[in-house]
Structures are given as structure tokens and as C-alpha cells.
Amino acid sequence: MIRNSQPLPWRARGVSDSVDGSTSFNGAMASLSNLIPDPTTAQLWECRPAAIARATFTGFTVGAFSAGFSSGFFTGATGAVGLISALKVIGSIAYGMIGQGDGNDHPFAFNLGTNSFLTITNAAGAVFPVSQAALGPWTPPIMDVIGANLIVTHIGFQTRLPANAFGWFDITTPTAPVWHTGNLQTGTTTTFFTAVPPTGVAQFYNRAYYIYNLPAQPALIASDVIGTTNSASVPACFFMTTTSGTGTQILTLGDATPLSALGQLRFYNQLGGIIQGLVVFKGATNTYQITGDFALNNLALNSMNLATGTLAPLSVISTPRGLGFISPDGFRIIDFQSNISDPIGMDGQGVTAPFIYTAQPSRICAACNGNVIRITTQNTLAAGSPAQEFWYDLGRQIWHGPHTFPASVIQPFIGTFIMAAVGVPGILWESDPVQNNTSTFIENGTQMAYTYQTVFLPDTDQMGNISVAQTLLQVQFGTGLAPLTLACSDQNGTLIDTVSAAQIGTPSIWGQFNWGQAVWGSPATALVNRIVPWRLPLVFSKAQFLATGQSAAAIRLGAWHFRYKQLRYLLDFTAAA
Image 1 (cartoon, rainbow, N blue to C red):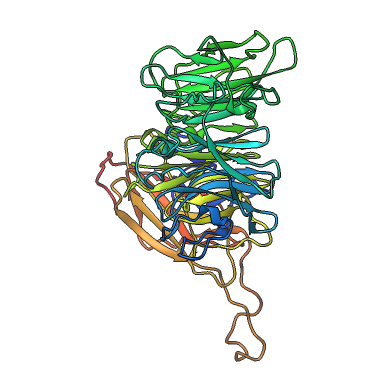
Image 2 (image 1 turned 30 degrees about the vertical axis):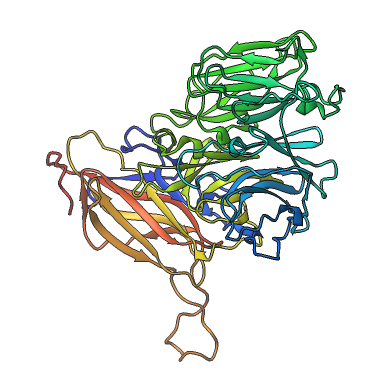
């Protein structure tokens, strides 16, 4: 079986959507679940560390209040905590909104430096928005800082009084936030948002820009500049100057397609320097760039170079390469020259299908920290349509995943991420993108496992079946771990063969064995090519190879090597030994 065979190395480079290794890149993998690149060696993989619980919320009970909430928040309702619907990390404090047993989202603030909740004071007349369902399409709450205020837009204000309001944390003293609700004012008593509440907010040129999706004419509404005074004696980010009843700070963008998201992005000026810009996403159909300001008489609104947008507001993120977002055909980046990239990973060169075939675009969320971009989607192409998280490495330009424990909301924090997990209410987690000395591999009470699976290996274009007589896998073992499971399956998912592989030898304890009846020395755990002891001949038209096992700090996985032999009989798609 070895005569006339050729070695085929397959060094795992990244995850690919491809169903045929002949058209993907060498080293394309169908799954690198719970595996991340080893920082020392190219195309070597180690285990993703587990997320660690940082803050655990409790539900309301009569006569007692959850940590972090003042007595002004008690409504008399009882029940467990719900979905963490909004999250924003500013400095070392995580602010957000969480559902409670009264059916409303309540504000919270958690000091990540001291691992303690902060007491939030409830301003007079402040109310809480109605919680949205934990599943299905939604309009996610959006948070952004304008001056000393962290504004929260939330569709749940539509049915509260005052109607169509928005909320904000006054963080003049970050460790003593005050919760407020109100409306954009155009006079001493006149409010602007009367039909629907705003559904997005972003800071630009020291103004608060609000998304106001009127059914007939969606618009972008700009507040006054921070620090200016007005007749109503309210903060400028909550006031809009008007002239003769006509708003001077209203931008409409053509047709009645709702605006979906905002993102800040600096642009390089051809004459030198940097121009601040605001990117406006008009549904999935168009993207606009705003530069300049009303007061400077240089405000400009221009459609961008490609007719695409996003239906995933929480996917709009700042990255070292520009502004990232999930479009209907995958992850794109708007660079600093205002160019929108092609979908990153299209044509089997990475990952696009889980984003194209997502069950709920509005539930997609993303975050970037350094070179790591993390994106969660509900992938209808996978069995059971699970929520999955894929990571994109900007430096290596590769995808990996799908990782277990996906996020419902996520934010960067120093060198790590703070997140809430899908299906795990009431807990904030810290999830590291690299291993460190304190990394563990038990996540939410469950031992983590990894999956290292190739795409279907490439065809030789010789119109015949393939035989693999020998297989090597480069592995570094950990002491005391369960054996790896290795398998080969054909294009129909039929298992051709499966075996296990474990470290060779066990540690010898002096005095605990008879001389000549134990292996002398320590077990062989170093990174080395190890023989995969197949029990059956592997004959196939198309096949993929899998290694899976228990996650641990010591585990490293490298190249597959296959002794590939072209057989002389014609292709038979049912052939499998």
C-alpha cells in the first residue's frame, strides 16, 4: 500500500467554509473549536482558556435588594434575573442593563478593578425600559458616552411614561453613577421624540447623534454641542436648537429604509492629517459617511463606495484596520480611506457562511481587542442551529472556531474581554484570548473539549479513489489527560475508522513497582509526530480527519501527515472501506 504513494502535509492554518479542500488553502480546517494559535509557532494550536465568572447578579426579593442597586430601584416584584441586554466598559467599570423579575431592564455598574458592584442612585422620575424577549429578533439597546453621560437607547421605553424616552448614567463621579430618563428637548417644555424612541446613539463632534426611525422618514438627529448653554438649562446632549419650529440638526437619508447602526471612524486626509467621521448604516442596503459639523458649516453626507450595510447593530466595531461590521454576505471592514472590503473569508478562504445563514442578524454581536475579533452568530447550517463564536486574527489573517460559550453581549477590557454568555443569564464573564499562568479549562462547570478537524482532503484530479496507508499527527500531550480520539469519515458522514492515542509511558514512583516491571522515567509528552494506529485501510473518494480530546494547558496540535496513494479504479462516491 505504500508503493507509489506521496506524503501530503496538512498544517492547520485556519477555519474554512469550504466543502472541498481542492479549492481552499493548504491547511484549511472544518473546525478549530476551542483552539487558538500558539503565540510562538506558526500553524501550531493550543487550547482556548475558559471564561471566568466576574460578577453574579441575584434576583429581587421582598424586603431585600440586589447588590449594586439602591432602594429607589425596588418595584415590589420578585423573580430571577434575566438577560444582560446592554454592556459598555469604560475604564475599569462595566455599565449595562439587565432584566429583572418585574419585566424591566435595570441599570447596573460593576467595578472590574475591585470586583464589586457600585450603588446606582435613582434620579427623581427615572423609569426602566421594558425587557425584550431573550430569543428571536430584537432591537438591541445601544450605549455611548457623550461628555459626562453614558446614554442608553432602548426600544422598551416606547411603552413607559414618559413615552419614547431614553436613559442615561450620569458618570460625573464614575464610582457613584446616577440613573436618569428623559427626552430630547427643543424648548423649555417641548420634547422631540414623540412617535418612537431613538434606537441608536453615537458621539460625534461633541454631539449626541440619535437614530430616529420614523416610519415615513427615518432621520439622524444631532444634539447641541457639549458645553453650550440653552434656555431649558439641560445638558447640551439632551437639547436640540430649533429655528421657527424647524430642526436645524436633522439629517434625512433618502428613502424610508430604517437606519440600523452608527459607527465612529477616522479617515485619512489626502492632504495630510486625520478627519473624524461618523458612519451611518441604512439597513442592509447602504452606508453613508458624515464629516464636518453644523456649526462649522462644513457638514457633508456622502454614500460610500459599495451598496451594503448591516442588520446587526452590535457587530459594528472599531478595529486596528478600520470599522468592522457584519453585512448580509459576511464580515467586512471599512478602512481609513473609506473603502469597504470584500467579505473576509469568501470562497472558502475563511468564514462567511455562518453569517450569511444566521438565524437572527440582529442577535449577532462582536468585539475587537488588539488583533482578535470575536463574532457570535446563530448558525443555521450547523445541526440544531446553535449559537457559535468565530474569531478572526487580524495579524495572521485567519479564522478559527467555532468556539463554545458564545457571547450575547461583549466588550474589550485591557487585554481580555468582558461578556455575557448566550443561555447563561445574570453573570458577567472574563474571557481571555490567550493562555496565562492562571488559565483553567472548566467553563461554567463543564470540562472543555477541543475539535481539530480538516476539511475534505483535496482531490488529485486523477479520476480515481484515494488510499491513506499511514497517518501522523503532531501532538504535545499533557500528563494525566484522557487519550485523544481520532477518526476518519467520508463525504456522507460515514465513519471509516476511529482509534485513540495517548501519551507513551507513565511516571514511575520509586518503591511502588517491581524491578523490571515498569517503565523507567517520565511519560513522553513533548511535541512530536505520532503514528495514528488505524485498524482498517482508509479508502475513499473524499474524507476528512478529526482529533478531539480534553482541553488542557499542555495540549498542542500541529501538522497532519498523510501517505496519499492514487488508486487505479474510477471514482465511486460510495466507496469507503
